[in-house]
Length: 193
Image (cartoon, rainbow, N blue to C red; front, top):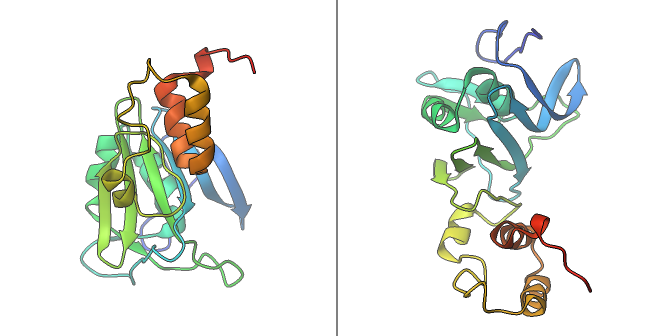
């Protein structure tokens, strides 16, 4: 078991196994995304201009923003369990090193049953149930909740596929493209152009 060291808490000498994409610096995995042995997965996406982390405090568990993925995936068997753990966390603005700036991120946290979006802004930590199971870079997730992807109210089986493609192309965001792919099960559909 690879020991996971943290800046403000004790090293996790024993934790759930995880695999993911990371930049390894000084023998530490700076995860972009990962999944643990129980199927809980997380991905950090750009949230530039909106992400605001805090200074370390005495009344919560201080976790640096770059430690969030290994901390939660190392300890939690479900997304709901991770959500409970998040209530105890103060996500800090601690730099990993002088050569790496503080990453401005928000995260998608998912398991087989649920997905959540995790955001820390000037208003503190906010954790949204994510009914789409999709997250992209900016804007904040509450924008997506207030402005569902175009086509959410479309009668899916009555609209020609070419019309849907045109709408998707016009919108031009990965968030909405992924939403449409999930909604229409494109991975099961063969489309001849």
